[in-house]
Image 1 (cartoon, rainbow, N blue to C red):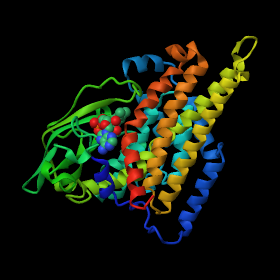
Image 2 (cartoon, rainbow, N blue to C red):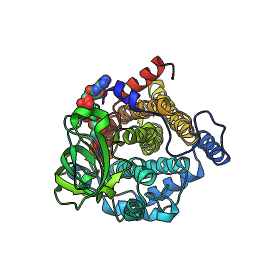
Image 3 (cartoon, rainbow, N blue to C red):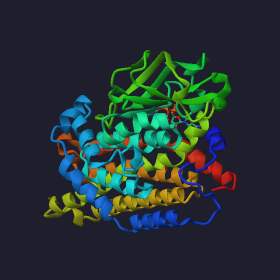
Length: 420
Ligand SMILES: Cc1cc2nc3c(=O)[nH]c(=O)nc-3n(C[C@H](O)[C@H](O)[C@H](O)COP(=O)(O)OP(=O)(O)OC[C@H]3O[C@@H](n4cnc5c(N)ncnc54)[C@H](O)[C@@H]3O)c2cc1C
């Protein structure tokens, strides 16, 4: 999708709350706003700390280096996360979740990122919880929700979100995956690319167009079971980082779905996608902000222990300033994340805040990962010490959920319209 198209399509409306942009705070939202302020000010918020402690105890996998090399997922980690309630954090208790608010869920994901050694697992959980599940919960029919949400929440099912194609990335609505109507049913044809969790997924949210010439106006979202005849998942595609997150293309060859498998209304796919992207693009990085904090703590510890020229390297100003820069980047990322979340829960326009938070957190994570490598010297570069993986894992953040260029386009466009 071109940046211009994205801005024009995005309504910056907020499906999670009925509060309009100009209305006063309602009491429930005010409570969540207070929680957001607490989250911003308290680096050791109890919700975050508890999840970090739990993850550090349970989600540190000694086989990670081997799995990372082999690009292998960790089903046991997924199961333990579900048992702890990660997948069900925001799911309505009617469907087996905890029904928590967005801020509490973000704090939990920060803690998860801090404690879990497997960034690929944390990313996989993140995309399901922040991108796939909210769509199903907000827009799904009762039948769709009953069929999938309890399993997604308890970890027995996994979900994936598919919009990108080989020739349709940022230019999302140039997609060529089509659907045709046939006797009240729909037949999907085409191939989606780079789908997180595709090799493991039991259910897909799939965007297809009635006619590529219609652009954003032709798009409809479907909920498609992985067992649907004609749906095939390609091989796991090795990638630079997040290697333990399975990732593949998904092909649809005359995949037939019923009218009950449409998500939202026929033709509303572009609005669904745009609204989903407004805040989720920032929230998906909460785990990575937690990982940045762990990375900083490790770098501080190392800089105190490592001596050269008969002194701790942390006493060299060059190293100390690097640590201060890492702290600054982490703090800025957190603040932008919770500001964007607070605007979101209050129903205030949050498109710009989310885009800024996405740019800040994703680019800060890459810069700090490079600083961590430099601070650790050769130990930062050699795989067995576990430092270099952060640099590989964070690089994807400037691409997925819309590249940094696209986020800057959004911010610039809003500024030029006087909406920034
Ligand atoms: C780890 C990872 C996980 C992913 N998971 C999923 C998933 O689960 N489901 C899914 O559907 N997709 C997924 N994707 C795909 C992702 O959404 C796309 O990679 C992303 O939208 C960019 O599209 P592209 O790769 O085709 O790059 P392109 O759009 O081809 O961009 C290439 C370059 O051109 C720049 N560019 C393009 N258009 C503009 C413009 N208008 N203005 C300025 N610069 C521009 C980009 O910023 C980039 O630098 C994932 C990608 C990654 C890396």
